[in-house]
Image (cartoon, rainbow, N blue to C red; front, side):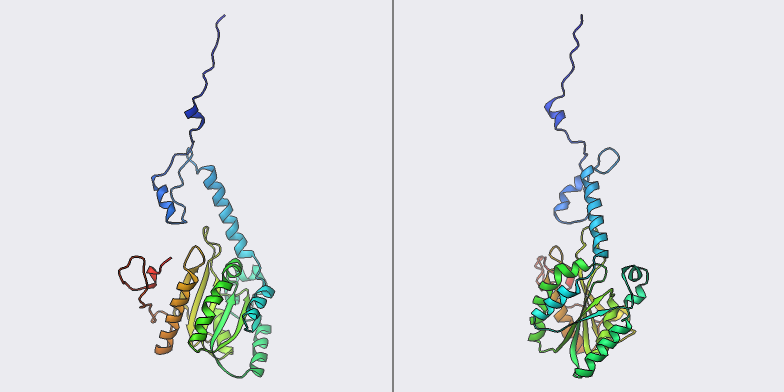
Length: 280
């Protein structure tokens, strides 16, 4: 009787990976972008596929997460500033996502609230500071405390008078214009949650406008983007914002006509200008 012997797989075959590596994988040390994922057959490796699904879920959650108005108001009050909660004309998140125009306008109740504040506080202010959920309340919850702790002392150093800090639910960037107009502010700063990316559900954006009033165009404001621990630092964002504010005060304008000509301490060490070279 012939004895059949079953071949045993080698140790090398036991530990062989089914993933075909991608030569770009070494570049993953320098970016969060989805590069160098490799492949398994004609598909993504299982780990890369599951990571994509997780990041997509985090981005969706960031869009729908509600803004914690009470916690933000407490945080602002602890820093010796008054918080005024407001709401846009969008009644809820579903309407906010379908009607971007409503997120740019104040609700009737919010207008009345600001009018009542002005009735008892008639003095004007230099800066209207607005915090809005935008498309990522997570970005506000994760970043607003260190951002305020970095920015508020710098505002005080410049001698600028800060009005009440308004916290807006269902707000978009342009809602800072009617708020600044109501508070008679010379400048407005809105800190807002940016559209979540698959690698950045926590990105904070800052938009600065000189002489805010209803009807301002997007080209009349300046943007500082990707503020978060894995992006632009709070200190770098504050340096750039203060520079823009000082230049806006000198030139009486903001937006595309106001360029960043500041000298930054670039890691390249070549003394070139522009905020694209801000250090990490």
